Amino acid sequence: MSFTFDPYFKSDVRRWTPELYGAACLSKTPDYSLQRILDDYVKSLIHISLDQQISERRQKKAEYLLERYRESNAVRDALKTLWTAGQAASPVVINNSTIGLLNTGSFENNGSLGVKMRKRPSDSTSEGADDDNDNEVAAGDSVQGRKKRSRTTSPRESFISKYEEMNDSSMWKLSTGKVVEKCIYESVIGSSAAEGLAYMWVISSKDPWMKGLFTTEEWEEIHNSRVVQKVTESTQSCWDLLSKFKNVTTIEGLEAILFGAVPEIGKHTEWVYNVMRQMRILLKHPKSPLISEHGENWYEVNVWGPIIDHLFLLASENLEVDRKEVACSATTLKLNEGRTRTGKGHYLASGKRSDAIIRATDSQSALEYGAIEAKPFFAGETSTAFLDDYDKLTTTLGYMMARLVGSVSKPDASKLEIVGVMLAGLHYQAVRMWTRNGNVYVARPDELYWIPTSVGRLKDMVPLLFSVWQMMKTIGACLEAVDATDRYGDMAMEDFL
Image (cartoon, rainbow, N blue to C red; front, side, top):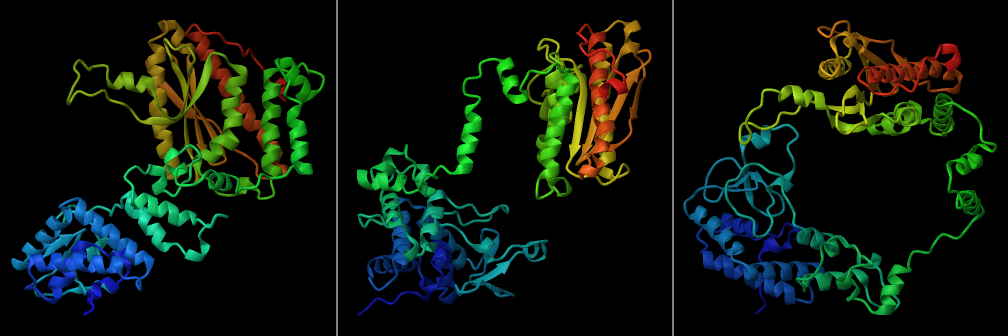
């Protein structure tokens, strides 16, 4: 007499879990004993794993569930909890859904499993409620009330699930006849020594366990399966160009290749030329990236890095621009000036972080002279985002100024002026802060400038770059006031141009 499977095992193999199987049994026959549920569950899995007329994937899943059942008591405990709740006529919560066992009331059908589900009120009314995937549980999960959390899948479960979704005809068959996917799957399932990369289906050339699954010939075939691109005319010309730099050992030699005869240029000239080279790349690009939307980091790397960061690298050995989400030392010191204890309830306070901090390179004092707040878009000078960044920036500058005032004599306080920068996409605005007597600090935004998006408006770069240069000069003068070196001197607009 042939064994008759429970209809539950005709459902999608990815939904096979002991908890949902037990719930399906009790929803149809509430007087099932716990032992009968366990016996039927194990017998069904054994027959599925041995029946040659059943697909290989269903057999593998049955073997996997049997292995889980034999390895620990988690499955027995879960089904026992489910069965006990059923005898008490109480609902059981599985991953945020309530499975009604002997209860009466309104139920929702869970789909092909034939299990009655009653969702919590919050599930049916919550915004963006998910589908029935929230009702699934993994084998071995605890069946009890728990706070709402997203379903997590173990690496092993993900590994099995991916294999079950593979098409046999698309699998990689080596010249020896070995199928790579089947070899890895069978070896991982039958071994406890498999590495994490194996669960991700990654064949690493440095993984000795994976290498042991294949012969030497097979291993070479796998790693030589990607043909190296042949040298073409374009790749050869790129290699020839790079080869010019192979023997460079001095700055003069590098400049000779880049510029021919080494020119006598100032630091500001080199900076302007570098910025204009970057603008040429952006304006000449066929996709016109300057008129497209991008993330904040794109603007920092492709637009403002060459304009601001590279200027300080070129023109100052005493200042640096430190990016990303940087804590302001002046703010931290101010917030903790009254701190006398450590431990629980007395932790070190930290202020808001800036997108960049301009600070002295002297590691002992590390005084700060400017900050940058950035957004990937510009919605107007009166927009909430822009105004919020302005408030945050001026607060940071205020803490910096207070620390600088304390670093100089009272008469020298009037020489102090620091600069913050507001970046919003392609828009730039400097915010200056100074003091007359060290008591009151004045903050004032300069004119708003922006990067042109067409070569016809390249002239708009002139006042923007001059504003950036003046910002660097202003910070340099402030650095001088606190006994640093001002290397920039005075420069008129005409000299700059």
